[in-house]
Image (cartoon, rainbow, N blue to C red; front, top):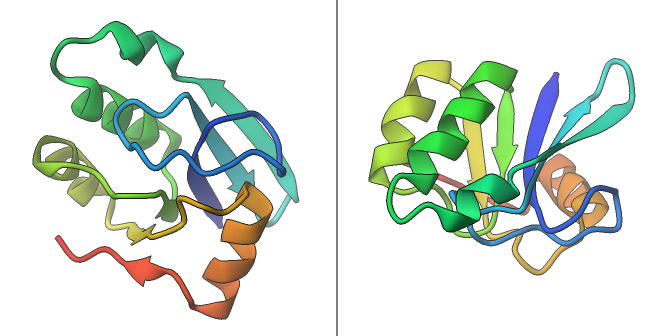
Length: 114
């Protein structure tokens, strides 16, 4: 299973970025390989419009099973993400990546219904 996090940093201790489209980093965790990888997403910071769909396209290309974020994607981004049939969880904005993973495993995050 591949889990994606919106993140303010590159490792397990980094905080979840509450922003979806303008997240600084996209972290992927492959549960089978126990491998955490990071992707710099800072180039969207200068986008006047379209940051959400651009971030959604990057995530789409990574083909995750689960997305964990803070506030959730906007309408334009969700139209891209819906094609993946992945589960999206929100409400992790005050957690580290490791804490967000544990909250997901315990079922305490909010499932995003679009």
